[in-house]
Amino acid sequence: MNDNTPVIDVRGLRKHFADVEVLKGIDFQVSRGKTVSVLGSSGSGKSTMLRCINWLEQPDGGSIHISGERIGIRKDGRTPMSNRELARMRARTAMVFQGFNLWPHLTVLGNVIEAPIHVQGVSREEAVSRARTLLDKVGMSHKVDAYPWTLSGGQKQRVAIARALAMNPEVILFDEPTSALDPELVGEVQSVMRALAEDGFTMVIVTHEMDFARAISDEVVFIDKGVIVERAEPEKFFTTPDTDRVRQFLSRYG
Ligand code: ADP
Ligand code: MG
Image (cartoon, rainbow, N blue to C red; front, side, top):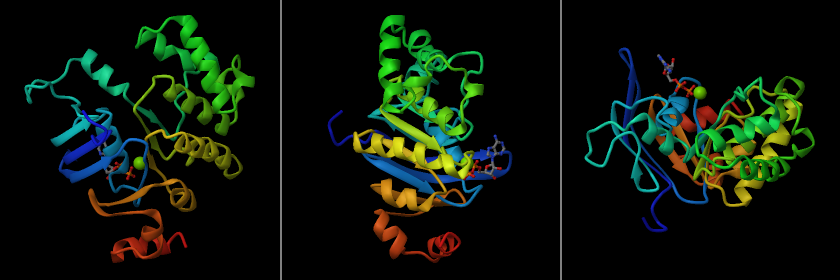
């Protein structure tokens, strides 16, 4: 692997559910340190693409490499990875969901140290120390002992981001991270994400927040009916898109 190897390299990705072809040959690359936003109407295949990258869904065709290493299939090109091999690969692409998915029976600190200790075998002491640093980074160090049900949605999502970072992922995949939040809580989560982008984290963000996508992204990718129809720098995408499909999409958010 060299510095030019993309962190994410998706080639010819196909996925169907029953008789519906949801992803029809997706090519998608993300370079190290870049933030790429994925836009598109509901049902266009955005979540399915992220879930395939993380192997939460098994693709029907194509390949996905994480920093040059193929996920899901062993080096022989046909044997499926064991659960253990998959867990190790998955940890490299942390995911942050719309619904937070915090463990309700664990404190904030407990949520952040759980996977490093039990999946990565990090010592409790080291996991706690790292968790405190990360919770500080997302502005949640005053809530280490709180339980999720006592937190606002914005606070929960910031804890979920700290939990994702705790695995030391090479890329964070965000699936509509602010869609479940009350409008007044969206900003606090977006500013944490902006700080991560400035710190040089590699991020993929599925979002419907157009101003946010325009401000944070190095590149915008537009998916329609399982096909990437446009990719561009944000200024170009939002001011002079190439396709009628994108113009039509943007006019609904104008
Ligand atoms: P998006 O995230 O862009 O809204 P999705 O990737 O969630 O789109 O869904 C794309 C299409 O795939 C939709 O038609 C959806 O109903 C279908 N789909 C997604 N997941 C499943 C599933 N597990 N089983 C059957 N159909 C699914
Ligand atoms: Mg979705």
